[in-house]
Image 1 (cartoon, rainbow, N blue to C red):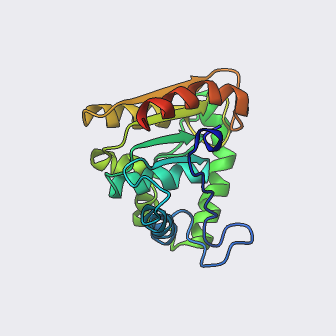
Image 2: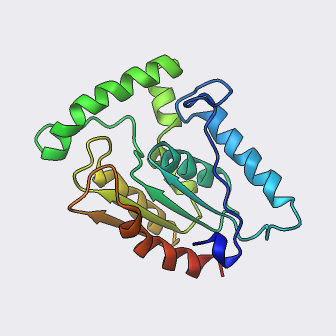
Length: 199
């Protein structure tokens, strides 16, 4: 694990999610700012190498990590797992993934409406693909082909967009998995990626 190799590992609970304090804003500016505050706090600690900070996010955390990276080019690397990167896109009902995503999309739209004003601008503010041209962080983007919450094509598109910026990015899509990718499976990709970019 990273901790066993001397890295400091911090888990950030998003404001308003679960039992966390603060206003819920469905991975919007309040959440992005909260994560950036944690990064700045630890950057200032004497036991942290300020130029070797990586982000790893799963599901909502992947969305937030990608948005933080769009604002903070000093992030050394990021691992994004099972995230959605374009909330404005409509699922393609002609594909199996699109049909699976129709019901989940309705739930996500409801969550966004509850936690934000539900406008197109609110959707765009939470969509990393709308700001991918600003991302300068090497990325490993993992997704399950059978994910009923996210579209693996968005994972591919995000990695491709980062590559267009001249920055390393790779999407790994697991044909046999859905939203939950087993820890042991994903660690086979994550461990060497972080070892490379954090040295």
